Image (cartoon, rainbow, N blue to C red; front, side):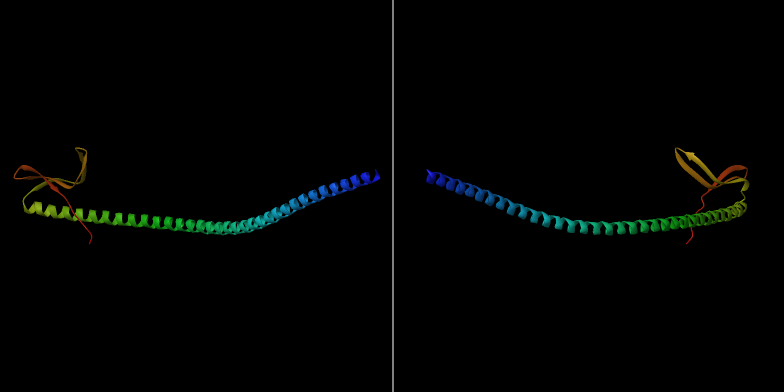
Length: 166
């Protein structure tokens, strides 16, 4: 019986060793797979770090561009404001000049009309200038209107003055 018991023990030991070997192989395989996954994870982490660094550089560059653009927009805005003020001044000067020119031409025309009326024997009763009226929803402007008489008959002379600076 001793032999049998000894054989059983040997078999049990062998069987335990076989199971231990199978477990060790499985654990070893699992460890290799975990090591591979860990290596892939580290590689992925390195790629992410490089990508993050590149993104950070791009963001920094874009922030500088945005800052420069903002300064340029502010500078251009100030220039536009300055130019707008200058244009406003020039417009006023041109308006004053053309208004002055228009008044000069109107005065010159009025004097000429007086001379013409005297030559034609019109008696001037009154002269009105720059009359503005609204007729049928339209604005009407008369530069000169002369109330006069000729041989006792009333006349109204209407004068349109045109002037241009060339």
